Amino acid sequence: YPEHVNEVAERLPVKITDEEISKRRDIRDVTTFTIDPADAKDFDDALSVKFIKEDNGNRIYEIGIHIADVSHYVRPGSVIDKEALLRATSVYLVDRVIPMLPEMLSNRVCSLRPNEEKLCFSAVFEMDLEGKIYSEWFGKTAIHSDRRFSYEQAQEIIEGKDGDFKEEILIFDKIAKILRKKRMKNGALSIESEELRFELNEEGNPVGVVTKISKDANKLIEEFMLLANKKVAISIA
Image (cartoon, rainbow, N blue to C red; front, top):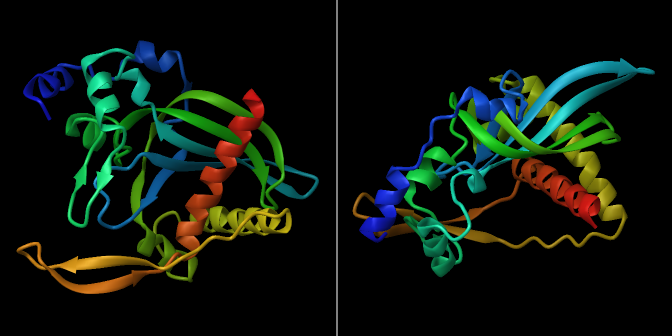
């Protein structure tokens, strides 16, 4: 990054104030976690869940899908915004990422790291375990991630291993499988292909190739991100 862009990024006011939180839906006390690749450097989405009530034998949960509120820090026309526009996107290489935003933002302030308060945009649904939605809400939130999971760690819990937030992960997994089944029944395309990942040694040279397999933990995240995108699109159509 150009030095002047990094300097501007380092000077950004990143402390989350009580005043800012008062303008948002405060869900910092709701169980929240991220599920990402084991080698991920930034965590830009998270899930939260809270039991609300029982209605005619159905357990109703508050399900939250959260993404980092980058727009709180990067204003249109700013130095950082102009640099990001030139880059267009982050570029993912075999052994590194060339980020669209300076590392101070992409890996720290706007990364939903565990045990840190973060500002987000969120889609929040009241849902039962069959995927039925009773209410929906979209807006700005303040969250606190309780745990960072890798896909492999979450998958082990789905397959029966004990671990942190096992009940919550199984709730997400159950709903996700129902949502996916409904999507397929309604004509969604199932486009899956093998993805390869290079294993590198300490010098950064490739020493092997492994096939990445999309399992339930990957599909869990996919379903809830699709749900959020679909519902937001419908709400503004």
